[in-house]
Length: 148
Image (tube, rainbow, N blue to C red; front, side, top):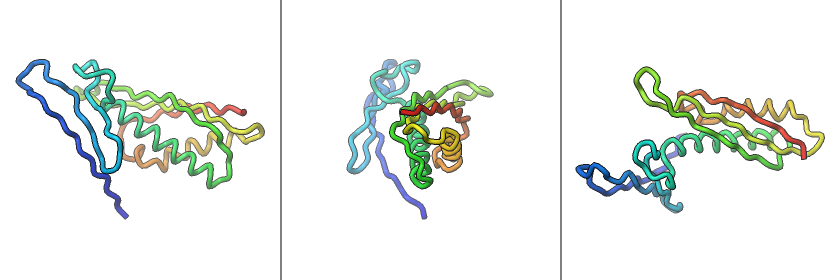
């Protein structure tokens, strides 16, 4: 059962200008546009999302949603989740690529929740996260479970 997610990336400028704009817009039917650019290190606009940001956020979001679904199915209560994820861009064998995405969420659970089960489900989510299954970079999982 395949699903399709159409989007449009639109850019205008002039590449003959050495300082051509890297700014563009991503749109999809029924959704708010996303202002994108290259990373500042590549002459982009730091105030806009760049591919590195978007790849890291796609992995972090997919992992979170998969984890929450597993917790709901297993009847494990989670009341808060905040991930300070980080995508790492590096040069490997003369090719620039995202080599790692660190996932460092603080997972808030009610007092008395089995923390080992929470961590187990967090790690299990990686197996079922379709974005993680679609990329070749390493995903470094560093959850911190906090009773509230």
